[in-house]
Image 1: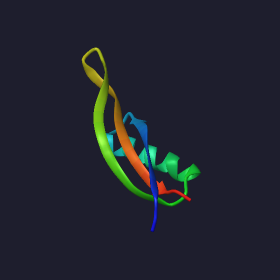
Image 2: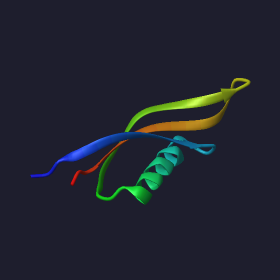
Image 3: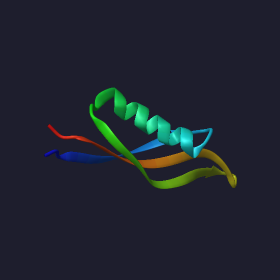
Image 4: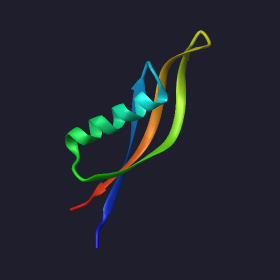
Amino acid sequence: MSVYKIIELVGTSHESWEDAAQQAVAKADQTLRGLRIAEIVKLDLKLEEGQPITYRARVALSFKYD
């Protein structure tokens, strides 16, 4: 039997939502072990003068809880 903990991180990128999600997962992978699932919870944009300047991805990550 296993137990998993779920956290949410927000990744940002000037390129794309995909890159923003990858940034969140890459950062989590540096400090957490046993990452299992990454679920995109929400996507949004930071705008400046009506133009997108930052893509943001809220990612729910689960990892095995020891």
